[in-house]
Image 1 (cartoon, rainbow over the protein chains, first blue to last red):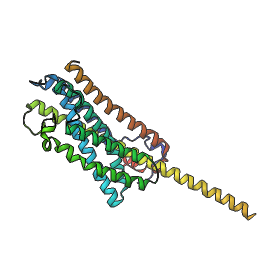
Image 2 (cartoon, helix red, strand yellow):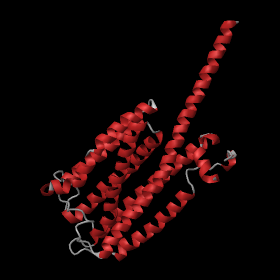
Image 3 (cartoon, rainbow over the protein chains, first blue to last red):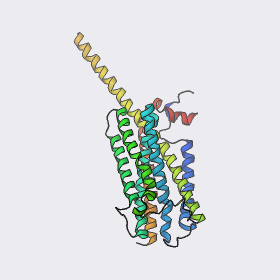
Image 4 (tube, each protein chain N blue to C red):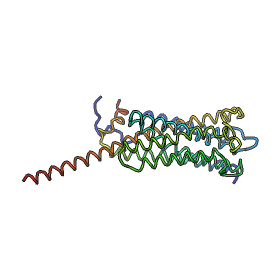
Length: 254
Length: 50
C-alpha cells in the first residue's frame, strides 16, 4: 500500500464502519422511542413510569460491559504491555462512566414515582453502584494526572482491577442482600415482562450496545491520535534540545 | 411531577448526555487529527484508502 497524500487523509475519526454503525444506531433509536413510548403497554402498578426501564436497564448493562472491557484491557496492559489494550481500557472507562452516571440518574428518576424516593442509602445496589462510579472517576483522574505514559497506564490498570472487584458485587447485590434493597431481581430473567415490553427492552440493550461500539471506535482513535501528538511533541522537544546542544558545542569549540 | 414528566426527564437526559458525549469525542478527534502529521495517522489513512 502506498502512503496517501496529505489531502487524501481524513481529518476526523470516522470511517465506513462508523458511518454504518451510526446509521444503525439512529434507526434503532427511532424504533426504540416509538416502541418505548407508544408500543409497549403500561404497567398495572407503575403505569407509564415503567417506560424508564428502556433506558435504565440498557445503561446498567452497558456499565457492566464497558467496565468489564476496561478490566480486560488493564490485564492485557499489565501482562503484555500492549498500548492497544491500554487505549481500549481508557476509552471504555470513559464511556462506562457516562453509562454508570445515566444508570444512577435514570434509576433515581424512576425511583421517585415507584418507591416514592429518589435515593435510599440503605439500598445495597444503589450504594455499590455509586462506589463503582466513584472508583472509575478515580481511574480517569489517575489517567489525567500526567507523567510517563507507561507508569500512568500501570497505575490506572491497578485502579481498574480494584474497581472490577465491585462489578459482581453490584450485579449480585439484589440476591445476596435481597432484604436490603428496593430493587427487584433481574427484569430480563424473572419472566414477568410482557412480550412487547421484553422485546423493547432487548432492543434498548442492542441500540445502547451499538452506540457503545460506535463511540468506542471513535474514542479509541482519539486516544491513538492524542498519543501520537504527545510523542510528536516529545520528538520535537528532543530535536530542539539536540540543536541547542550542537550550538553550545560549536560555540565552545571556537 | 407527573409520570410523563419523569419519563421525559429520564429519556431526555439519557439521550442528551449520550449525544453530547458523542459530539465531544468527535470534536476531540477532529482537533487531534488536524494536528497529527499525515504520515502518523496511519490507521485512519489505511481505513479510507484500502
